Length: 136
Length: 236
Image (cartoon, rainbow over all chains, first blue to last red):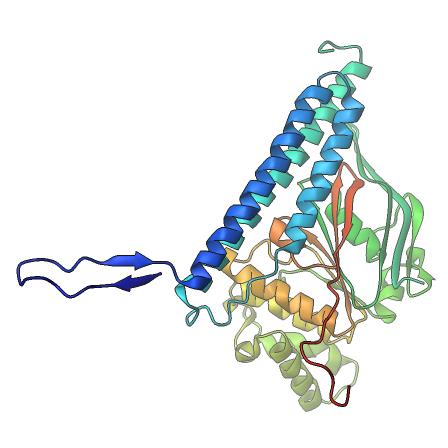
């Protein structure tokens, strides 16, 4: 982000500061938006299928979780490790881009934990069914 | 032939109350210079997978082969052929000077003390903790401890480093550095097999797996980018 301060018009007025994104900052923001939108589309489609298919077919639900798992793992794998060796010298745009990448990784971690939790629930439900319990 | 191969490995723990399946038909291969990470929740079997893969525990079924030998022979056979298991905590006397800790085994095997210290200092520098050479074990912080544990493994000049949760105790902003160290070790030709309790452990690895109830679920190889020269080679 760059700041521009036009010449003040009079001694009593505060200079008005206009902020403008740097090219690198604007690019990082557009990439972040594109990534989030793509992710949300896939996520919404997958969760929709989970609801539609999984309610009656536990095996199909397990397959969908496996697919979700593989997608989250591949996405996590693609995020490069941050190079913090120049952390004190990086530009504001580079700093923010690094934080944004990290946000994505935390979200993916939460998704992986949810998948793990859902599998545990699925196993417990399957065991109850085998034991002749309720919840069909 | 893979450097390390787990073939249809199963392992169960049982006590009078319950039976827990830790590994259920797990197959996995690790190649030289490859970094493989296994992500899983608590009780998923990830640590058992690592310990069985290092020969520290024996499977109930299936087999584990490292560098052509069946690890039914035990962990000593694996160590002798270049498998180093890293426990990212330094147990034992905490007031012991770090260099003494790192050189004691080498000196006991007959190496000159000065040569052993030079080798230990070089390993610490390789692991990014050269400045810690003169401190005591208990004075290391969490990230330094993990790096020192990795340096200790490097002293054995391993072909495979097996690490259990290298970033579990490390502050968030220092995790990338520890993982970059493991990446650099793999890039130098030493294979790395590790477990990860956080998603960051999967970033940039060659193969990422997830494990749940002892079964491998996702098994994703990195998409290797083709290297394109920016300029034509001289004379081309």
